[in-house]
Amino acid sequence: MSDHKSLFYTGTYTGADEQGIFLCSLDLQSGQMEIVNGTDGIANSSFLALNDARDRLYAVSETEQGEVYAYSVDAETGELHLLDRKPTEGSAPCYIALTRDESHVLVANYSSGHVDAYRIGDQGELELSSLVQHSGSSINQDRQEGAHPHSVFQDPEGKYVLVCDLGMDEIVFYRLEDGKLVSHHAVKTAPGAGPRHFDFHPSGQWAYGINELDDTVNVYALDSQAGDMKILQTLSALPEGAARGSASADIHITPCGRFLYASNRSEDSIGLYHVNPSTGLLTSVEWVSTGGKTPRNFAVFKGGYVLAANQNSSTIVSFKIDKENGRLTPTGYALEVPKPVCILPVTKCKH
View 1 (spheres, helix red, strand yellow):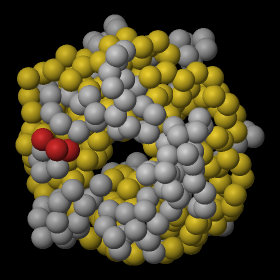
View 2 (tube, rainbow, N blue to C red):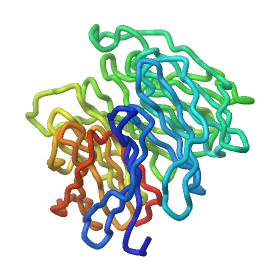
View 3 (cartoon, rainbow, N blue to C red):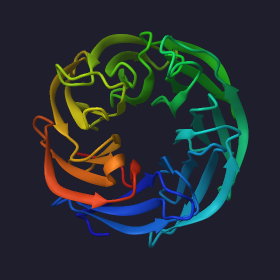
């Protein structure tokens, strides 16, 4: 791969008999994208995780009888080879993450309302080491009748596991002790918010969450030592005057910590926020169309690009980031991929 190209994997909502995980390339000079190869044998590979050595990839199969997959990555071709697959003991796993020390894989099961931890063996095999069932509900009777964990990840210092539970209106903190998820603390969002995805400021002082059901973005003061957060600010994830769609989806901050982006599926757009370097608070700047339908996920790339996965138009669209103000400009390129719902850069982004 040349210096002016970056690789990324894409997870999709496709059947097991179709190619579902795609390795793609991004031209960092133009924003043009290409499919390099594809992997079949997994249905609804809706979220992916990659280790730092880039030789192991993990994926969830978001199906009624959920599964988690472990692959080895061919160093020359980037092709995936199955190492192991295990049931999640639940339904609709929609998020997967590695612990900071890469000893465990964490999985959020949306429909069955529980969280898994898997110990990773020397050969990449997975062993279920912990299963924690969430129990609770909130005010939205249609969407919050029960617990619905939507994402799971570790804090920047690797001390705590955090779970955004859309159904309970909580971000739940756990300690991971000898492979077991041990309850620590829970942070409440506004009733009916529906916390979905999350990102951390590079300084470690602040964190940012997107709430699906009330279409808002929360700014948190993060205390990684105590395992706690406090809400500092709540802003709309939609442009002024837009009808609420209960469809806000993904959130990411740039490595420089100056720009935050949030996607919403009702308006098919990505919002830009400027981050105050002293307080971490946000200022809404603008919203841009993702050039497709239902941007469930997006990613920030080195070289200053954002790639948006438009699920219902089956396209990935690239945008150039203005390094001075963070504004997104479409490159004019779109890549046809069946129902893309996750974009995972292979290389760490730096710009």
